[in-house]
Image 1: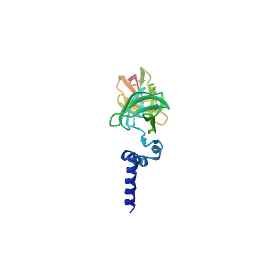
Image 2: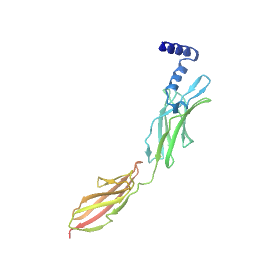
Image 3: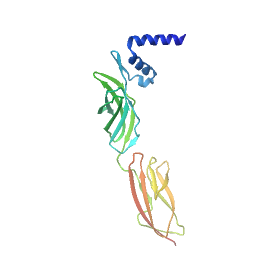
Image 4: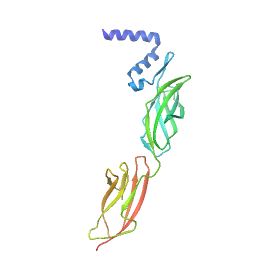
Length: 219
């Protein structure tokens, strides 16, 4: 009985408002409460908020490309930290791609709005992108450059300081970084010159390299 009542009501609604509006109404009530607030009703039609595809959360590029989908042939406006940055028009399938969106150093909160003539949607889902261009922290506390190390043991502990979110490798081996940013790793030395190549990479893709030469001899 409940199913019959629902179908009868749906049929009546379709007659009075048309299939496209009925379909968008279904989408409206099936959306999450947050996205549902983004819908605006203008006359007899809805302008659906666009949906942004999730970009990388961190980058070292000041310009990014965002893609997503909305209604077909609809103007899209991209806002970065509440400021209008870019515009584009979706294709005949509702797909859009917006290039050269500018980022500021630090966190960038991005959302989009659809517009069609004088009508506009509410906000899309928001995405967050962190931008950082500077090199990651890499401080080598031992060895010093051209250090001379004399010992009966040929085991040497390399130490340094970085940041917990970075990745540190020495001669291709990953070093463990503790919660304070300190890292260490042991190497077996050859007599004479030993070269160590350090590489620090942060989540943004920035890299810093350094080199140390250590001279080892036994007592």
